[in-house]
Length: 440
Image (cartoon, rainbow, N blue to C red):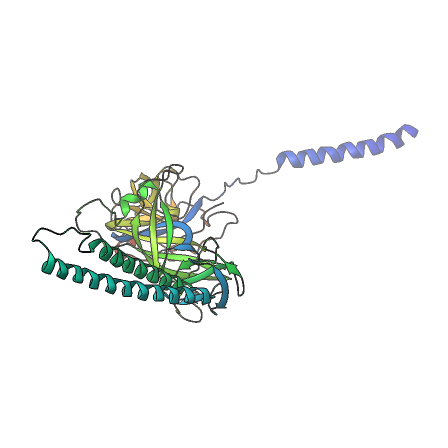
């Protein structure tokens, strides 16, 4: 009986295992379905020929036209200082900035005037003696030629020279007296002052550093391949042909938390390339940078860093593409009427951080893919979107895209979709297409 109690549970387990095995072995195979095909959604734009203004980008530091150190021409004590003689003060050409004690120089003028009068009196005496000697020789002479000494000509010449010397000393004294008033050599602004009231100065003393404000200049470097797209107002030795008009330039800078723009022009190019960078510097000029332009328009200050947009040549009858449409190997992606992409290498005339200009290799009306694609197989099917609407022969034919995280939007379909014939999107004319953000 003990062995029956052992075999019964074992038999039950064996029968149960056999049933389970039979059920597993005879169950129907589940239907295997593959994943639906994934069609990438891309943004497109119709190609249209247009004219494009080339913008050359550069940067530089604002510098004054003239920067000089003011020095006195006479020595003495400063007895008066103009209100404009301070850091940042404005002054006009010829304005008196400082006065030096002029009493010694006034005395020198009086002395020189008195000496001149003495020399003029002595000249009158010498002229009278010369005339008397000539008359005496005429009355008493023997008819021979008199010597210059007999006619007192040396004494007359000495008196005349003394008068000229006295006049020169008077002019010098008057100039020194005038120099006690130190005037501005040009309209400008004080950058730094070194002296003040009561200080004794000499011709070797530095009074102030000042700069002109009629216009400022900015040295802007240009790379050699940029020079094909701008006509510079070059300077030549001797006669030259008609110079081109100075190119316009927009200068952008930061003033506090604001972005400010100033307008200027390219006035010349430097005479040599930079030996370190092999770049050519052009000079931009902004007239009257400290003029009032409005409460929210600050002046263009010396020493400020600015970025520049130089207006170059206008390229005619070209295609302007978004920079995102150009692949690293110089290819672009064209979407045909069957919604399939085709890789095409195009020659680039000009490119900047935002746009690419192409003249040949494309046809007007074609659809350009502007969505960056990491893998773009030639002939792969895509879903083109124009202004956010899907295209099928020029009409929307599919539901909106499903946003895929971290990449382009994808549309799912259980089967192969029908393809529309023709390129209706290209016949709609030029329309602004939104550029999708690049896949990172």
